[in-house]
Amino acid sequence: MIFSTKAEYGVRVMAHLAKSGGGSPISLAAIAEAEGLPLAYLEHLAARLRRAGLIESRRGSRGGYTLARDAGAITMAEVVRALEGDIAPVECITAGADGALVCAREGETGHEPCPSKLLWTRVQGSIVRTLTDTTLADLIRPATRKTETVSV
Image: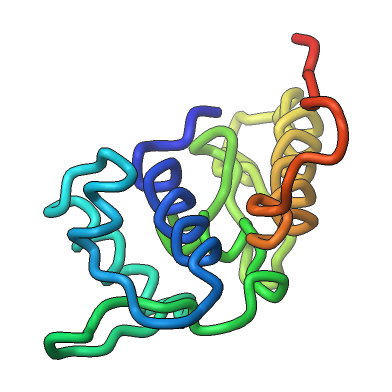
């Protein structure tokens, strides 16, 4: 699964705000310059993050953005969902009304239960668990251990 630049840039914006310590609001122009990101795109992402209740904005000459909550209370799952929508490794696996994952082809005439549903359900669960277990504060803490590596 490849997340889009919405998730990548949005996480960078959130980390930048978290590193500021929650003091004065920071303008998107300052974030764009510091992070080397396009301002117009950040405006779009900030609107999504604000609607999700993750950041707050203040207008005026001293305006800008701040985190809506403490960095330790914001999970990466919240951030990614605000920017990307539902987290699913393949299009045919979606969450039903009760939250259970279902295959889009289940129940269709002539289709047996999907043989890959178990795999994609586990992949989706691992991704969501990792994002839920990682807070914004985790991302901005100084590294105290070796960089984690993942074997593929």
